[in-house]
Length: 305
Image 1 (tube, helix red, strand yellow):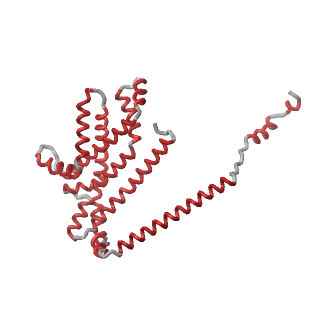
Image 2 (cartoon, one colour; image 1 turned 30 degrees about the vertical axis):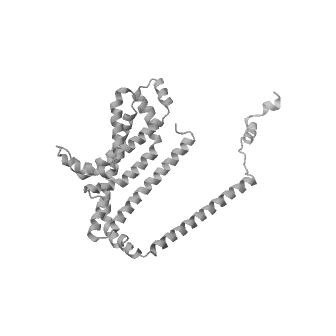
Image 3 (tube, one colour; image 1 turned 120 degrees about the vertical axis):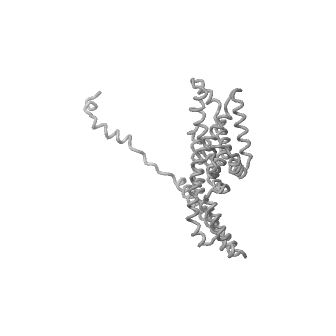
């Protein structure tokens, strides 16, 4: 090493190090800039066309309805502002029952549906009676209309005069909802369990996990993640069908609207109740769509097994 090289200290090497590690400035090509500009122009044009077509379609539908011969009578019967303001507090008071039924029945449906799905997927001849009972349960309640199930539970159970059995229409109506929806949810869970590749079970057993541990720590976590979107769809349907407990005489939002309509012979309270249910359902539906899109993106990127 020469004397000049030896005399060079750390301070002399620093400028070259900073120069070597300086970030490169990237300048996009003219073709890329033109392509991005074309994409932005096309997106704005598509948005403008969609907005115009939507406005035109809405205007045509509005004019067709307003200019129909029976529109004045329909507006007075179904869209009366006075009866809407009168019905809103009573309908909201009854809606509280629907929300409580949604929370309680939704939790019960998820638990019972998961137990039935696990029973249907148990292996071995010793579990055949349990699998047969679970299969018969899902086949029966999936084929039985919900309205008939409500009538059978609400009016049939009190007719038995069993000691200690409630006759509360809210509890009986909620029981009918749980019986019906747990059959549908069980099939959703079973589809998720069977969608897990058999190699996952074999790998877990080869690591020394028991059958119960494999189901709990390996199979069920993957299965539940895969079926979250259809489960949310079932909860949306359950939220709407809680209004059917009015058949039993429980004063929910639908029955409150029915009481008010029977007094005035005006059906605006039904419209108010329907719009409230729609306002509750739309956020849940959009959340379901978001979860579905998020799951699809993660699966496409390899983030979900």
